Image 1 (cartoon, one colour):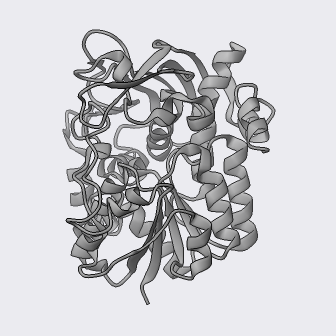
Image 2: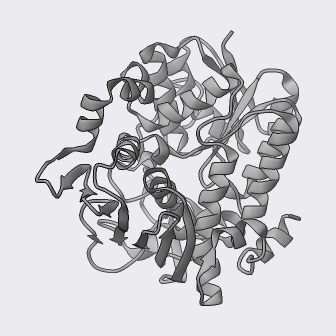
Length: 417
């Protein structure tokens, strides 16, 4: 029987997830799920995604980066289930009480992930939450405790974990293709074609500490650490500095015609972080969201250097002179493992993360991106902020134990954590 899914949070990222669900249908998994309900604080936001040709028009693209999932083409529930009209709620508790859903997918802001997921699991529903997993490490740990206590599936939508580059990179490094890992290097300063005060100009909650937890350190840090951990193994400590570059932000009207509001920016928009791997290697990442001038990035994405070669921009370069596509070599040399990672030819990371969640429910297993994994990514990301405050290296163990939480203290106090 199909798993009945309820969507909580009808914001722009929903389009990327609906595209993923459509890909699952087209790849033969149409009997695994059905989206039966939508919940948004404003009823019109739910109707924006319910039936094509009805409801308010699609929103403008929220950010200035071409190809970003937040800018995915608009979709509707009836694109997946023609003729079906999903139930609409403005209170997720009513959705949970209705019996319309077996599981929920939570696409709200960071500040409500923990409360909604905990309520859902206590109400007998499985839950998946968008990254970052929670507003603080303590909030994430509370979610995990409830998942353990109730036995319901808790999953984190971390698309980097399921991307072809990450999965193939993990295989190549475990195979020993480039030897033992010595260094990891990644950096991108600025976003293309934008005013610095327009960064994330239509998602006001991202500029609030109590709304987002942190800035680029949290929003992008979880992606960064998840990819590195998956490919290179555990990260044990972080030493970082961070800064608020633009203390004022502007919010634009949906049609870009004017500045709707000017607000204070409370969170970081730049960091420089060094980190250590359990294997003995080390790494550096530099990220900034709102610099002036042109965008400057370190070529190659996440560059990984080993004792026998390197991986950069999806290719391997070995000391024996061999080189080529990491994904291509993975597919050629480990066809069975490749097919398991990308069933029925699915390579869209959003579709794969959703499939893993659904199959974890169906098979009664722990998902690949469990709450524990999401908590580690979040703890390492917050370690950037905690390290910057303390002026010293911070270990993952200190973050998970709560020994270091100076930056997060007012967040935890506000939410009663």
